[in-house]
Figure 1 (tube, protein in one colour):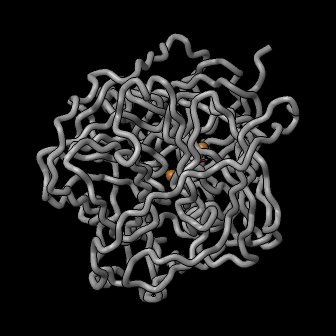
Figure 2: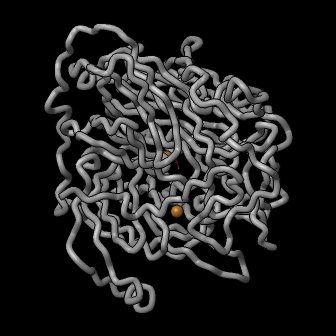
Figure 3: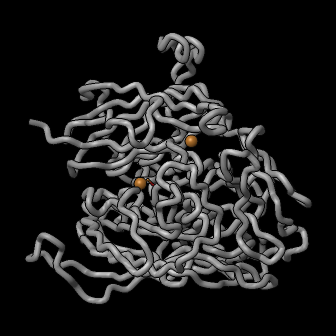
Length: 532
Ligand code: C2O
Ligand code: CU
Ligand code: CU
């Protein structure tokens, strides 16, 4: 019997109407809404067509820095503030995005075809979201507006990875080299600035990055207008249709431990619709939310198939009726609308409406069934691991320093580096979640496999450091049997992943992808070191 991650997701309840206070896991420090928020009941659903972000065009080639003989397609993509209508009936909303869009333009390439991207910071001088200067890395001596772009899931050299301290101010830019020596997958780019990442991403600094390859092409999956990215995130708006990021009333600062909004944006639109034909579609789904775990389903209860996860195709299609997706996770879905001509089907997240599919009254020639197998994913043998690291996920309720901090192994960002895997070695990381929250844990540079999850005795571990398992081992879900870069580590469980540290040596990070946690110390640097 497949194991359901949903059991662990302590979902923020739907707060409709006055929706003053979406619940968080931490009631004592929950977000508060000082301003009245937009009541979505008065907003017409499904009046705007779903926008599709444009595919970025390169403006010629340039030499790779430090490797003058190597020329690569070059893109310049600027971060800017812009105004957009997220809904037909609402005033324009101020957002930050890339080239005037949020999501920004989709970068698309082939496996093995590198590219250079100059990420230019053309943002204004003032931030429009509440910075907490008590957060490490966001002190008053730092400029409010700073940005640095990370390619999430990219196997990228450290100088191009968007290290959180490599931020730069308006007027500056950084040119990064992406080798794309990796399998076809949906990656995404987003801001990664230390201390304000949650605000920069919330403001809209993210976009899609697709890598293609021959294995994927041979499968003859829906493509062109039948392949559609769905970048989904939750937000909250004020009465003037401006983004609203709540603040804490805690005397220590305005930081909130999690964000939950009632307004779902898909590709930047609120409650859009998509006209589809009665045939198969491929949807590339990204959970771009700050904190929210998704549980997506179709209103007619229809089954669909997941064919890929974070780092590419699964070994075989996995039939699903609902899809759990943690922040930063991706799912490659095939939804078949055959036989549904004339129907209106709603994509829902729990009780929230997200997107409406309008199936055209059309006759479509029958299509081939989905391939039974997709891509072989060789399991990494546990015996190949040269070490196992026990890494605790900890929430500290320290009323003196900060209301709440989330830590990895009780260490803070600036503490000495403790994870130094050898290049090309395999390690098992046991993520021991002592907290009451699920944390989506992400490692830069690498792809990994999920080994298993298991309950453990929290008190024995937190008081004596003794890891005592309770109950049986739970294997990964079928849709976790591919390559991953982000994994849900549920509360009270040990989640084991197996990783080969390959590609580059140098400094990277690993962190919780709940951006509020990441900003408040739940992120650590790690070094891949040369094996001598
Ligand atoms: Cu989505 Cu550290 O990244
Ligand atoms: Cu990443
Ligand atoms: Cu977390």
